[in-house]
Image 1 (cartoon, rainbow, N blue to C red):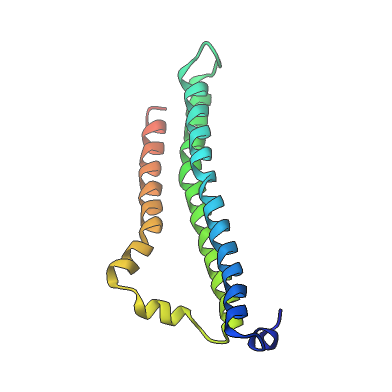
Image 2 (tube, one colour):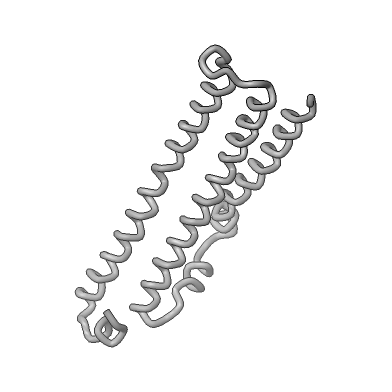
Length: 146
């Protein structure tokens, strides 16, 4: 649908069209949110099975360290990809809505946010940064004994 087609609709039809796009945006964000806990749970399970039970999976000390290090790095990398994907979906949804409305709503949204809301919006990126630091430290500790 082009901008002129959207403009030719009455306000009720415009709202229905925008509501459809908003619902799609919300559904995509929610469905992606459900994947992260599954990835984290599978990673934790694999770490426990592969490194802590030598009779089930016989691994040398070096192999166990490599696997543990890889699975540890999987956590922040997964979070990083997840937050990037959510941000990209949000930007696409806003651009789609802006195309229909014909003006920039990002600035309006930004003006109406409190400072606390802006800080909270950066929360996932801050948490990922902390995860990277912790995982880097743990990786150094894993390999310090070699």
